[in-house]
Amino acid sequence: MEYQTLSVNTKSLRLVSRLQATMAWVDPNLKWENPSNVTQVILPVDKIWTPDLQIKNGIVTTVEHNSKDLLVYRNGTVKHTVVIITEVNCEINLFNYPFAADECPILFHTLADDGCGTYLDLGDLTVVDSNHGDWETVNVVYSYESYIIRSIFVGLKNRAGNPFITLLLPSILIVLADAVSFALPLGGGERNCFKVTLVLSFTMFLVILNNQLPGDSKCSPVIRIHFCICLVLLVLSMLVSLVLTRLAKDGYLISCCFKRSKNKRDKEEKKNEDVKPDISVVHLNESEDTQMLRKMVNFLEAVKAKERKCERSERLANILDKAFFWLYFILGSGYFSSMIYVMVNHKCYIDNYKFWNYI
Image: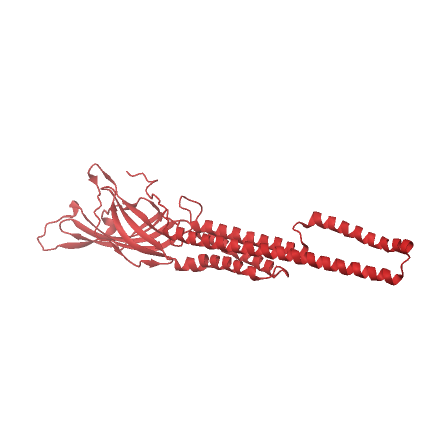
């Protein structure tokens, strides 16, 4: 028997295979004596009984004759080749994706009842074209479940190169770029715009990942959790940057209440300043030059106070920004190391025979 993997659908967990089986069986009705030294004849396949070979776990299976004729020997032995194209539902273990590897069974089944019927006796098994797409056929072996059921275990291994380059590596680089963006100044808005762009870019990769992988299952891909955590880190970094930018610019975090109270207080101070010169003129009878000089001194003192307040706000925002950067860097490095270790070493097991009822 020759086995060939045609395709592996990672989204729907389907394995499409091609099997070319050369069958041999004995039909007592086709025996003949040999007075003329004729040892074999060729007969039409539609005129001869052929074994019914079924794929028990096949969703869609087609069995086609490789030739319209078959070979019959004088002792009743018949040889014929069939080509089986089958699509089976295979619960592939994708927990370690893109470092996934698993076995997918294909069950052959024939009808037999109390010693009457067809029995399977499988011969040699060879693999043709083991490389196809992102999945590689590692090995193909027989497994004998009963005298009427034989199975082929197809060992599959995902090539990590393409998914690593298109999904895992971009996630690492985007989070790394987000960490490096802390070098940008808080003022000006360049950092916030850059972080928003990173979040939108990462969302695009999350959509690509969702289109490639199946839904939740027992061994759901851990890379989906990895992408969600990375998205949370990026959004949290963006929000912290926005808040610290506000703190560095205005000296407070919440603008609605504090801004109204500050504006009200400024108006009152300005009103008092406008009233004070008049009072001074009445009671102190100061000259106009003295009043102008006093207003200029008050203005310069207010400007210096405002500058000192802005410097304190910027200094506080920079301290908080550096503290968050080191926290972000340490947690991100530890998380990526742990996640890669889990992807490579952790194992999740799936029983592919759980839902099958053997006859």
